[in-house]
Image 1 (tube, rainbow, N blue to C red):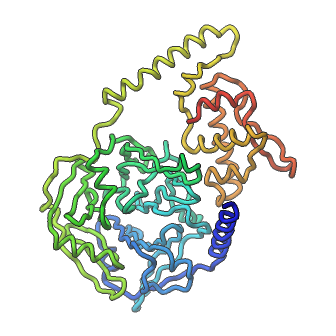
Image 2: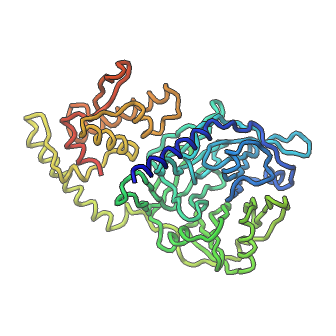
Image 3: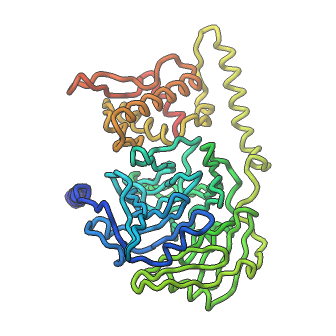
Length: 463
């Protein structure tokens, strides 16, 4: 069994090395079509999704791109071509001949860390949310930096994972103004854990991102009917100016995020037509019509999808926020009692200058973010074995391995300082939680571990 895993790992490593060294086309051309010209005339950003590998009409040489799904994003700045799970981004140039040209504007090297991510435009900037890669999903927001031609991590108040199940294209919706992005629920995946712990965890809280403020807000909890719809949509969904159309064999549902409602249209012929469009076609919804381009025949067509024909089902996407529900308040009572016990213990031991935190209370406190928890679990696991974590290990956990050394150092310092401050406040211990020591192999570099005096309390704070 060990030999099989070793061979598999070696094969994946060689495959990734081969693809990372593959030269990627700097310019891609396609035959001119009114389909692409019309997209740029629309009044709000439009995403045209392609659920299969790169279509044959795209003219390029790189076999790496051939295996990647394609999507187009139309904004005020122009039409962009994006290769899924790679971060490779091209911008269209119209040179007045029979072809349309897409010129590469990014310098992305790494790939396959953002499988199933959601690409969208907001405030004239291109963003990418979440994705799966390296055996786990992430809830990070990335923004394309036009100056550096790379994708930057955008700090937010929390990580929000997309529901990367079933049809991943119904995992989020952005309003026409680009001010908010809605995620109906989360699916957190970690295939790197043991088989007893690697099942995808579903977080039913519905979130809304204020893109300008970089803040995630809880809208409520996804309702059972809505969760079933998002999980079982049969084919591609279309984002509109109010929500998402969800395709099923029996009909079409419409999840309206602006009114928090769900409606339904029973039209079998329309369903069959839309279902046929999913095989090798680019398509999008705009003002009551679905426009499509067949990637094989290059035929441009449209079909009516009238939102006024939909009938409300009486269901909602999310219920009211948990913060105002009775059961949530009741669940908070043990925490309040625990904090009261902690206060009394602290007051009693004030003369000694230290605080012995009650273990039951410590287990209820969760001061660290998901990223900080991942780093602490790595350091605690290594420290208990008498080992340390290198800078390379920490960069991998923090998602920094492709960033510049200066950026890596800054983010590492900020994260560790935040962790030490939070631990000192919660545990009332002056000892720094994370220790740095000179590397035995190279004295120029540091390695990191958890201070022996802090390991027991840290274990109580981690899930």
